[in-house]
Amino acid sequence: MAFKIIASQCTNCTACEAECPNLAISEKDGTFVIDPAKCTECIGHFGSPQCEAVCPVDNTCVIDPNYPRYQAAAE
Amino acid sequence: MDTPVQHEDTYVERLVDMDAVMQQVAEHKGCGTEGGNSKPSCGSSAGQGDMPTEIWEKVKNHPCYSEEAHHHYARMHVAVAPACNIQCNYCNRKYDCANESRPGVVSERLTPEQAAKKVVAVASTIPQMTVLGIAGPGDPLANPEKTFKTFELISKMAPDIKLCLSTNGLTLPDHVDTIARYNVDHVTITINMVDPEIGAQIYPWVFYKHKRYTGVEAARILTDRQLQGLEMLTERGILCKINSVMIPGINDQHLVEVNRAVKSRGAFLHNIMPLISAPEHGTVFGLNGQRGPSAQELKALQDSCEGEMNMMRHCRQCRADAVGLLGEDRSAEFTTDKIMEMEVDYDLDTRKAYQAQVELERQAKVAAKQEELKELAGSASDIKLLVAVATKGSGLINEHFGHAKEFQVYELSTDGAKFVGHRRVDLYCQGGFGDEDSLQTVIRAINDCHAVFVAKIGGCPKSDLQEAGIDPVDRYAHEYIEKSAIAWFKDYLEKVRSGEIEHTVRGDADIRQGALISVA
Image 1 (cartoon, chains in turn cyan, orange):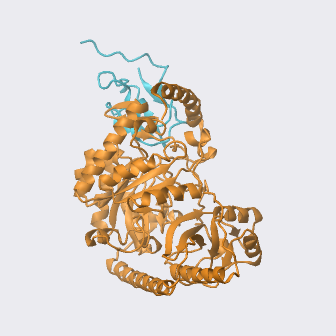
Image 2: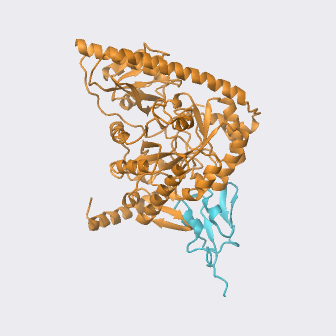
Image 3: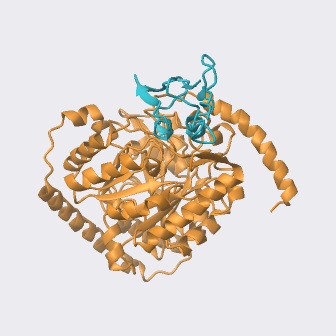
């Protein structure tokens, strides 16, 4: 249920950290990481995942296949 | 212009190519750690002239806004703004390398507190440092909290330093009031187009209001916001410089239209810069073979816009963490580790005393030029030619040929000497041994010049220059540039008239696409 950041491609530009509506992104050991427990893939917030949309390097903020896709809570 | 249908076809083809290129950009590792978005930064020509006094007061000591000031005053950039909200095809965020000096590149990211300490440390070491700019490495206004916090701290600690910023303009209209509140009196906007169809070839996307826009739609949003921001700034009396990157075959012709659009909205100065593009930069343009302009192409475009407004020709396209006079980079002396160890006492009086001395030097230089110009007044000639000058600053011919990292270029005519640009060259001489290949690089960089003025030059390069048709002139060592150039030109005209020499037209020259190697 989450996005992840491909560390080897990350430029540490901080753009994603500021855009994340869940405060799920932080700097850790010189690179940025997404806390999968907090990530909602921006569902319910925005039309598209913000980290992916603002990231300057294509295919760097991507779906983490180790987690099932995020499901919004039933109304 | 193509018909709409044909245009669409070419556009689709371009997108296909772009995908392959974008993947290469993603995979490109650069040769360092951090990167940044391209944010070109940093004038007007000579003295006050007919400029209103309140504007002259703002620009006279600003090396980026006044060509004359850039010989005497220094600037620094602090890299507090890493995030960006647009992608440019001449930028790769990953690239940083010790041998690289171009916009958007930095070695270290600073917090606002570190940045303020750095500014005070540099200002205490370099009393001619009068300007602090935030130019990235991303976009200052995509990092508004960090940018404005930095301005707030600096205005308290070093109140005499002018503040400026350089932005792509996407979020500019949202921040104009804050910019005015922090007394930022110079803003540079990078505007490469006013036609979204052209913009789509330069910007693959923009991130605006939580959404990524691509293609013509992205470029339309960007141009609307840029022009709106420009209007809002000039309404408030904030001086605006427009930077444009000249990309041959994409926006070179169009920049004349950009020039008209920004002039009509009150821009003070237009700075047309050559595209920096090489495969090793890992940018889209570097990888798809997009070339930069030649020296003649750049000058022709700048000349054609000059009737419209002030053109800046002394921009060094410096890094987002540059320190020193334009054309030098002393950033390696002020790394975070070194700054944090420095005990700094900000002494405003010492700075003022030093700057008063600089003012005396400036006045002496202008007086010397005026005197020599009077001598030239009697001669009439259509001859216009370029000369290169090796200088370390202060408006003097005070650099050895072999030590020059760049040459300043002046256009000489019976109107006098006019600064028209500069050429970067690799260090030709390292440790006293001249290198043949480097000498050829220097000759190619100043191949459009009739003479090169130096403080000193060795025997070998002297004869090679003469062979290439460039007169090596060392008899004005440590004298004023303009006065000496005018005196040499008077002599030249005399020799042409007497038939001793024949005036010939020189060829084109290269603009170097790489490193200004800083020697720490």
